[in-house]
Length: 378
Image (cartoon, rainbow, N blue to C red; front, side):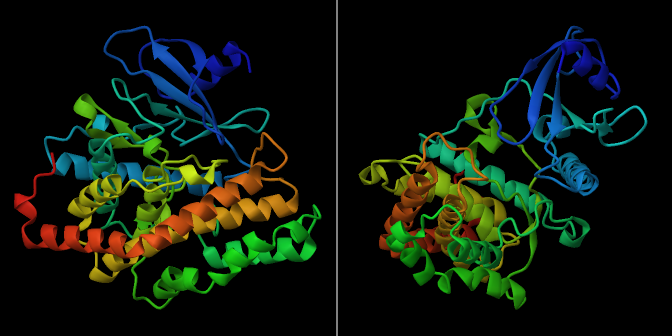
C-alpha cells in the first residue's frame, strides 16, 4: 500500500498530534505492521496493523477479546500503584466512529496501538535475569487476569493448543499421505504416536474439572515481553491468542523457547541441550507471580506442559510436512522435517531431565509458599 493509503487509514482512528510517513515495523509472520512517528512532542507514536483474516476469521471476537483484556489489565495496573497503565499495558486506539477496528474498501481489517517507547525485546534469552523477568511478566499477566471470567473470551484460533485435535490432524495426514512422504518417517511417527496418550493428560484433567480454565496468553515467546530500564519487564504484547487455556500451556511454551540452546529448526541435534539455570530462573519468576492463586495440581502440571508444547509443535511440523508444506513457510524441501526432528530431540532431552525439572518447580513452590514476602526477586 502507498503511504497515502496508510495515512488515510490511520487518520480514521482517534490519534493525537500529527504523524509522519509510515515505516514497516517488526518481523511478524501473521499481521502487517507499520510504525507512525509523531511530529508533535508529548504525543504517542502509533502502530498500525493489518489483521490477517485468514488466521483470525472472527475479527469482531478477536478485537473484543483484546479490548476486554486491555481494559481489565489497565484497571488492575491503577489499583497496584505505582504502575502506570499506559506504560505497563498496551493501549488500543478506537476508530473515530467508536469501533475497535476499520474495514477498508478492499476488505482489509486494521487496528491501531500506541507504540511503547524506550523498550526492548529479545528473540533469545541469554541471562538468568532475562529468564526471571520473562517468568515475572507472563506470571503477572496471568495473575492480573485470574479474576476475569474466561467464558467472556472467544477462542480466536479454535483448537490452537488442543492436542487431541492436533493428533487427529496428524492421523489424517498420515492416512492421506498427500506428499507421499510417510514411508520415510517411521521413526518420527512412531516416537510421536508412542507418547500420544500421555500427552493428553492436561487436556483430560481440564475436561474433568481438576485443572481450572484460565485466561492464558498462548504465545509466550520471550520476544512477546517488552523490557524497560535495567532489563525489567514492562509489558506483555501480542494479545491475538489470549483466550481460555491452562496454566501449563503458557509455562510450557515459554520454556520450550527459553531453555533450548539450539534453534527451533536446529540441523545439528547435538546442539540441542537444556539450560537448567534459565529454567530455574523463569520458574522462580513465574511462581512468584502466580503462587497466590495457582492450585497445587496446576503447579504439578507445569512440567507436563514443558513436555507437551514441543511435542505439539513436532506434531504440527510433521503434519505440515506430510501435507506438502502448506501451512508453515519453509526455506528448503525438508525444513518442516528438520523442525520436527529438532523438537523431538528437545523432548528427548526434557524426558532425560524430567525429575530434575519437577524438583526445581517443587523447591521454588515450597520456598515461595513458605515465605513469599522474603523472596528476593530483583
